[in-house]
Image (cartoon, rainbow, N blue to C red; front, side, top):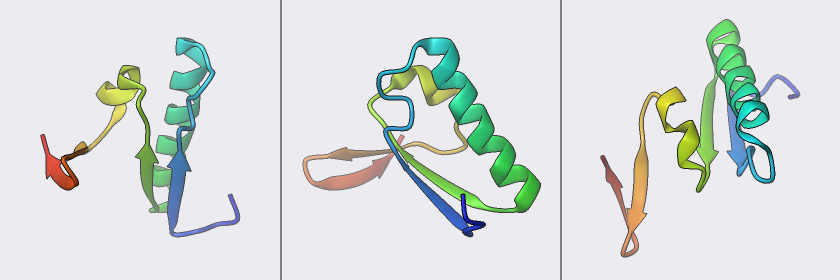
Length: 66
């Protein structure tokens, strides 16, 4: 991951089954916590919502927090 302060992950769970997708998100979470980083995940995969800290949605061209 090249030791960046912020990790941008665009659809990191695309085409993965539930177990593998969860492993990917958990790996990102461990990296964030252990190395004091930030991560932004862009996804349509609602199975990953329970693993997040904050959720933002884009509706009608506006970003809203739910």
